[in-house]
Image (cartoon, rainbow, N blue to C red; front, side):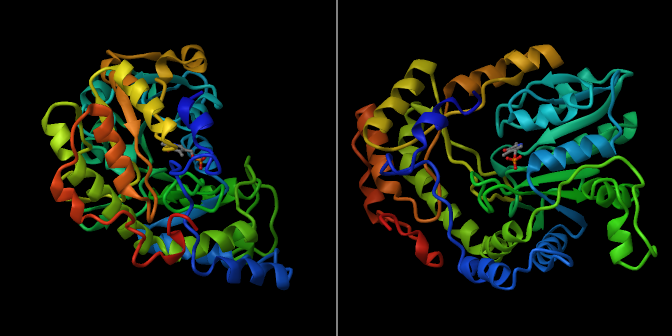
Length: 412
Ligand SMILES: *Cc1c(COP(=O)(O)O)cnc(C)c1O
């Protein structure tokens, strides 16, 4: 299990303060009903098209909407023509999808460590891991924070490698005022229900490398040039390449569009909860009880995760139990891929995995969603460490219930 604690501790019905509570978008019912009432499930897929346009505008690039980020990663592996004998470098500290998409094509995985600040892939470790067999570098933006994609771009260009960015968690994160995810050859996004913007299950592939564009559409449509046919570029469509069935249904797309339209408000609301946690917990961090997440310069992150890094695994496990006893769900993740059962079979570790191991055993994620009641969580953490809550925190309201995200009030 990768989300060991999330599996048992993440039941909204049981937990007073669940780890995640999905945003309900203003237009979701209207859009879904539009599909149902017109029985409009078929071509030309207006909701899927509107999602694609929204995302293309956001990334200023070509996008294929998919049924998951895993789908998008699998398409990335196909587009990179990864196969047996090839090596793919990726961080050990990530979700299984980043790895399995490339293992599925028969590639050997080369896991590297993360850096200790943002827990993103360590560029020096990547440089040392490159061999004559290396074909692709896959970077991950942990907690939505951008990895050092410019350094990875230079490295990939120097060594003639392809670069994939698993930006599953990064929609709405901006660096220098721009959505991240436009530098790699291919970037993948997730709309899984654990992500900030979701449609239950969903994803997208951002195709930044122009040579990949037409094949990306073909792969997503069972290996046919159906899209070219609908665009009037060919007069019939047929099977032209290998492929998969990656496009989401209209029901899913209707839900996704309603979420995308609320993305700015959702991000704003999550960011206020994130900042409230940081401000209230800073005094404990200053006592050395744990370290807080970094808010990097030049980045406007999307507040996907608020995590604490405590000093020992026992403290982490006790804190998780303490919070769970108070009906607060605060899971950890990820178990390192390099020592996982499938990781051992499909890959090897290059360099050390010390930071991955340390973060994996000491990290705890606090509940974070629009309107999450920050105060009881902060109080419980103070109680656990036996420290009185700083008076200055009194001014922070119990519920940050999203000025703009009305339906998310706790208790509704
Ligand atoms: C959530 C996530 C995925 C998988 O996304 P799905 O849409 O569920 O396939 C892949 N990589 C990372 C880093 C993720 O956080």
